[in-house]
Picture (cartoon, rainbow, N blue to C red):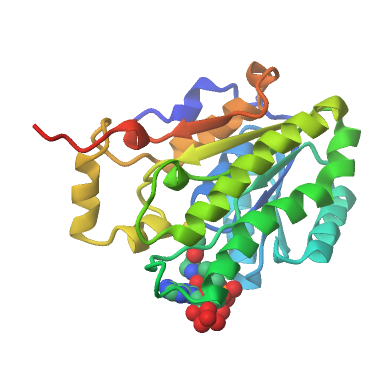
Length: 265
Ligand code: COA
């Protein structure tokens, strides 16, 4: 089975340095893998030391490049400043920030505690702001900076049991547009990817367990879940010279899921 990444030259990202929050697992681990495989120097950050160390070691082994694993919580602005300094100390510069750290669970709005709502807003939305702000000077110095925010399609409609994540991801998309407008003058682009249902992720296992997964596929025009590699390929494209005039845009990668209404026929 060919990989969607096969279309890129094996050195497509040589000379680039990327910092990927949430890179320890799931979609952002896949983005880290793709970036390193295509020649970038990559740092991944997560608040869980044991997860990040294990993933960094695995990615180094899989890609043949030394991937840097850093511990930090995106909710902590000082921690993200420290993480940024560690990336610069190791690789000498930073070109790309991927904001992927996120938390989610299913909860009815009436039963969700205020702290539960706030926690997801803090990780997804405030974490995206904290990390972006922390890397601003580094991306400006790069002259070819990119903030790439991983959001979702939840907030395009009213998605049941997802009031916290929907509100957070709507805010993340707002950050994507805002930074494009404010930071374009500094040679920094800001883009987003809104993944639809992606198989083989912890999120999908928890959000659509068992039979729900098979039922969910019926609502996707492509007839299947997406793959982590398909999201990684979109990230590589948005990072590549092919996308240099794209900024402020959120690329939906969902097999048509978010535009499909249930059939009444
Ligand atoms: N349903 C309802 N509320 C929940 C919940 C759930 N499944 N999980 C957490 N919360 C609430 C907690 O009850 C708490 O609120 P409270 O103080 O009023 O009780 C609040 O959220 C904070 O939870 P806590 O676990 O202490 O926060 P945390 O910072 O350690 O972790 C998450 C927050 C979202 C990361 C955590 O719930 C989690 O591990 N989720 C699964 C992993 C995940 O989200 N991975 C990313 C996939 S997209």
